[in-house]
Length: 418
Image (cartoon, rainbow, N blue to C red; front, top):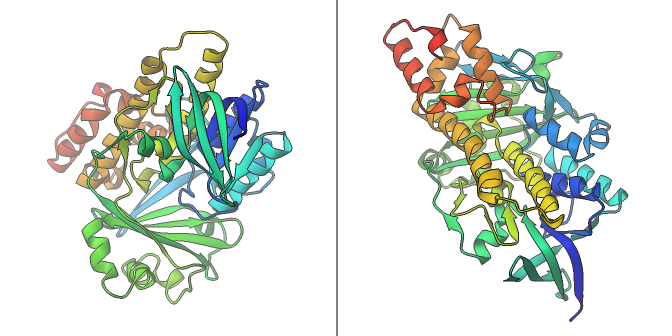
């Protein structure tokens, strides 16, 4: 069997794999990307957050993506009944990008892979990794194309960016239960024929129907809008009943006082997709000769759009560390990769948990708003969850709960303590 020799093998051509490939291509390494799907393909994760713009820039992908004219996302809106909370990324704590995009992922991911191929990156679509063996830090992988032909690839390092496919966690038995309670989602795209003009028509919104139930509305620049319902799994199953996913999503739209007129009687562009119990985790993020990035290692919840951010953050970091290792440096993967990524994951995990307890919603929707607190939370929502100068990052494990308790009990607090 033919053996292909590469420096780094990347599994998956989503955002994580693409930023890793983009970075490494600039370093003149022999890289190979394998992708099980054919592109363009449908996938969730359509709302980005500003931190990802740093990664696309470093990977050399930003100009090609900018040219696609995706819908700009300058912030996010959260709705609960009559109360609306708008976070403006240009008014946040600390430095960082003040906008990002709302993207149909089929178009977005395809644009990235086309740009990488234009630059000479070897990407094999409809190719799956079926087996892998490690000999020290090197690996020998068996991959199979759509015709059933097998090829072996010897690599000095493997970056698993396989997302929900979770290739190495599955083959190496690294999966472990998520620490989050099970939630599910149903989503589709619609022709937004009743879209209002101006910012109202383009603004991403999260409409809170119950504490653990919310509707997402993500307008795209192509005239389509993504609609999704997220809730604890039991609620979704009850909503679905015997009628199926399409009826469940229609029922969810009817529950939204804010959006029912805009989206009632709408038709879906494709059969709504049901994502069930999507949160995932692993027992370790790296090993001799490999690193897990993006959803292949950890996926939390779509409420704050953290998925693509963790994908690109971990993808480009793994690429940088792998490159340094191949140059002869000794890399402490625990400290520089796993511990670093875990700090950010821990922050967002707290925010997801406190969203579903209702504590974070208390902070979002309390009136009058505290602008200083809002700026600090906005930095987290923008993805800058490693900036420990922000007390809402550094003290994430207690600040939200403490402030929510004080607000609910009409107690005063000193902002300097946070």
